[in-house]
Length: 89
Figure 1: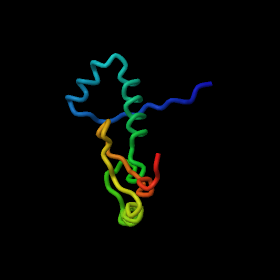
Figure 2: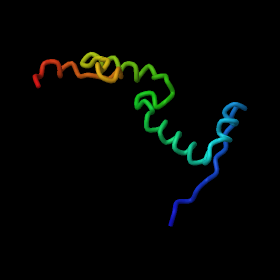
Figure 3: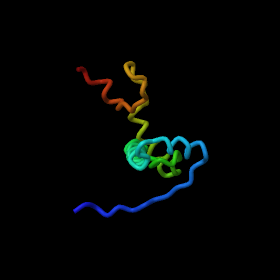
Figure 4: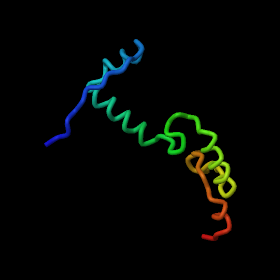
């Protein structure tokens, strides 16, 4: 037995509506895009782009023991534990 499906609607500007209209299966495309976006959502701000003052306090404490670093291979910024620099490979 499959899960019950619901229809969800949203407003789109004319250019987005035009682009979606040429998709062979726009519902599948939209489902896939939303699921991908949800998997890539920042765990701290949960996609809002803003952290609360309380989260900022926790972040500041966390960053006392970590730093941001840019990957030499893929150029992505990531968090590195300061303790890791003292360990040899």
